[in-house]
Each structure stands twice: as C-alpha cells, then as structure tokens.
Length: 507
Image 1: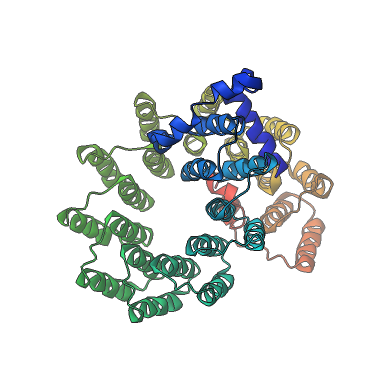
Image 2: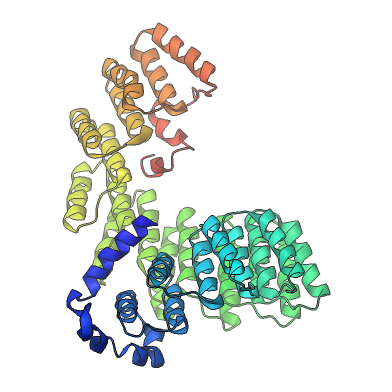
C-alpha cells in the first residue's frame, strides 16, 4: 500500500503546481472544481487531469461531499486506473471524508480488479459494520474478483449468500459465473447454468453465448458449438464482432484455416464489420501455418476495409516472416511500421534480432540491438539471451563469454536459460572444461540446474570429457527425480525447454 502511495505521489508532483496548495489562494484556485464535475469534463478526463482535480478537491474549503468524490472515483476507475482509485480513497480517509455505499462499492470493485481479494473482503466487512447493506453491484464486483483468481467455489458460495440476502442473480451474475467456469474447463456446469437461466426466465444474451461458444471451441466440442450458434440465431440473438472474432481465433489456433476463412466470409455477409482483433487473429493463424503470402494479403486488405494495422498486427507478421527465415521481409515491415508512426516495442526488436541471428547475420542483429537502445527501448533478459545464443551458434564463443560476464554483472538474476545457452555453446566449441567449471559454479551463483542443463553437460562430457563425470551427473539426476533428455540431438538442445518461456525466442 505504501508503494502505491509513494509512486502515485511522485505522479502528483509532476501534474500539480505546489504553489496552489496553501492558504486562501488555494480556496480561490480550486473554486472551479464544481464546474468541472457539472460539465462533461469527467467523460473525457485523462489520468493527469483526474490527479489534478482530486487534489483541487481535497484542498478546497469546505471539503466536497462524498457524492462529488464518488463521481471522480468512478471516472478514474473507468480509465482502469484501479490502484489510483485505491490511493485516492486512502487520501480521502486521511482528510476525514467518510465513504458511502457507492464509494465503498467502487473501492471493492478496484481491489477485485487488482486481484486483491483479501482487501476487498475487508472493505466489505467495514462497510457492513457501518450499517451499509451490499448491493447486487457490490456482490457482482466480488463475484468477478473470485472468478479472476479462479476461486470458483467461493464465487458459488457468494451467490448463495446473495440469495439469502434477498438478491436474485441476474444475467450479469450468471455471465460472470459461466465465464469463470469456461476458463476453468468446467463446460458442462456452465451449460447447466445456461439451462437454469432459461428455467428462471432470464434470457441469455450475446455475452453468454460468446463465452460458451469460445469455451466449447477451445475444448474441441465443435458439434456442441455449432448447435449453440444455431440456438443463438433461433432466439434472434445475432452474432456480433466478438462472436465471430472469438470463433475465428479458435479455428486458426486449431489449424482449421479454411473454416476460419469461411467464417470470415459469413461475417461479411451478415454485415458485421471485422475489427483489428479479427484481422490479427487471421494473420496470426496464417503465419503459424506458414501461409505468409496469404497473411501479407490479409494485412494489405485491412486498410481497404477501413481497419488499419496496429503494433500487434505488425509484430505478428514480422514474427511470421522471421520464423520462416524471411527476415529481410520482416525488416521491410519494420521500416514501414516506423514510417507510419508506430513505435516498435521490445517484442518487435527481440523478434528481428532473433531472426537475423538465426540466418547467421550477426552484425545486422547487433546493429538492431544498438538501434533499439538508441530508441530508448530497454533490452530485457530475453534480448540478452537471444544475442548470447546468436554469438554461440555463430562461433563467436569469446565474445559470448564477454557478453555472459556482462549479463551476470548487470542483471540481478539471469536465470538458468542464459547458463544453458553458455554451457551448450562452450560444449559445441570443444571447451568442455570451461563448460564444466560453469556448471559447477551454479550452486554458488544460486541457480538451480534443470533437465536441459544436465542433458547438455552429460552430452558434452560423453563427447569430450571424463565419462565418470557424466555417469555421476546421471546418478545425481535420478536422485533429484529429473528426467534426462538424452534423446535430444546436440544441435537442437534449445528446443527441449518446456519450462522456460524465455527460450521461445532462442530455440
């Protein structure tokens, strides 16, 4: 909580003139806050404006009412600045401003959105102690919070409490539960809830059907999904852009590209306009399956449909080209992206650096790294691992060792991925003794070897080292319950890490 207050206070110092915070001048300077609350100011408010307005309000005399503060809290929550709302609430209490039912509900909502359920429940307890009865909106926020952290059992218990308190679950409550169940793979229970809704005369809406359709498709229950879609249309609930996009996304991820394209045509025929998310899903699916010409064609088609590419679109297509070693095409897109005013992010740079390392153009990869730094995009551990791997596979083992030492000095914790890359590089360069030294240093460095570390080292020792050391490592692995990946080919060891997400760019 203190961390939030400190970081937010720093933001305050940037947006509020300290000369406005004192004496009679303050009352005059802040006299217009009511005007801002009355006009449409809150509808288009920016984060900086919300901060400045809050401090205008707390330094006004007399202090504004909780109703006025609640309007600002609602506007800030709508900006998804949930931690800021929590900070504002704490400051309000320090100024002696008491919460009411609505402000308590907003606070509970924000704690739930931040997955801080214990705080949300604490606020609920305080609210009830003060004599405020929770509303269905309060219960709805808590319900969403439980589902966000996969506490489905607690969510159902809360619904029982709601009913005991005299509230009948509405469509929003059912939709929240169905969404939580679908995300946890409990589709049959979700379908039972749909039937329960119908028995109670609560008509399922497009959100209900979208959630269930997505869940059924991801579980491979295509016939159930088709039946659900027919049922939806029979009830005159027309599929919207979310419905079509969700289904297209599932189809492309399952490799059913023809079905996805048919669904896209049906979407157009139904006069539902695709959005960026729709096109990004289609482009991603085509790239995943090597249909780069079609992906580029879809990319070019977007603008003619009045839907322009964004950073995600560019990153998806660049990644597709680099995956299939067409890095120069990826670079052309990168240049086009810059010309159109888009700022490349860490993913863009990592993808290109990895792509050029893969095709052996190490100098270009290093130039991109330098360009990235000059553009003030901070390299992360994945960037460093990509370059380390590139140096190793391109035979620059001495440069790789220098890079590795720099990483160890500059990074707080570089993790086992970097060690695996370096040990493997040393073994491939016939520097098994050096690799063994590095392996033996792992406990001192506070890094735990994984199955891949052992596999790399054992293969290296079998090839160019004392066999007894390799046998000792196999024995140690068995004792620790680690399964050895001895079927791995020496040149493809990087592909055998399912537990390290970082390796996805260095395999």
